Image (cartoon, rainbow, N blue to C red):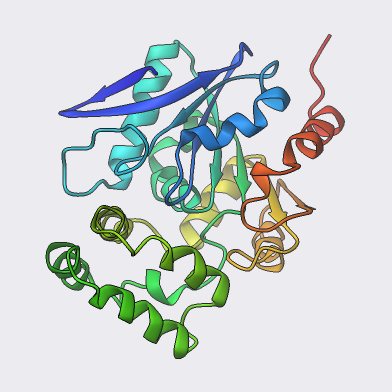
Length: 272
């Protein structure tokens, strides 16, 4: 697997396709760049796809405690230089959407389109709030709770108090049973403090000023990032398309490839 060297860190990525345009893909929490291999047949002719393993995930070796939006922007720039392109498109799933929102002010001039797949950032999320969970608290949790089951009880309480919906609670609860999984969650949670919780005025302003094509795909049974929330975001953008498909938050792994292929052929046909 190829590697992107960044300071003392090594970001692994999956590469496939031979299209003329570079597509950089960011996965969600507890996943890896391999997620996008499910879409390979739909993307391979149009794009050269680089799907990163994010810090604390997959085979990436991230030596620093956290990462920030400027790091994400730097990864994109390094890939842009490595592949010798002036522009690139972006694709994200779930948490990857928040990373793109954070880096957007620094990279938007180089981006030609963004594919948001079940993206985070379409609604207020209590566990992502900076006011509810300030940086000091997140740092304390990362340092003190990796080897403690107390963090699991916190999630139970949040669910009981209806501050976490059942779908989100179920997904994240599975990530708390082992210290290494708790470490991944807590280090990611601290890093996400530096990224916007949802689409805000700045992101809407940038996307609309650039008239940047933004394509939203949501599963109709997604309880983590509901399709109706994504539709409200898309309606505020001047050049957005909103599509629903069968499935839940992880519809990419099921039947999206055929629907995406059909959507691309209809909306963005390749020139002969």
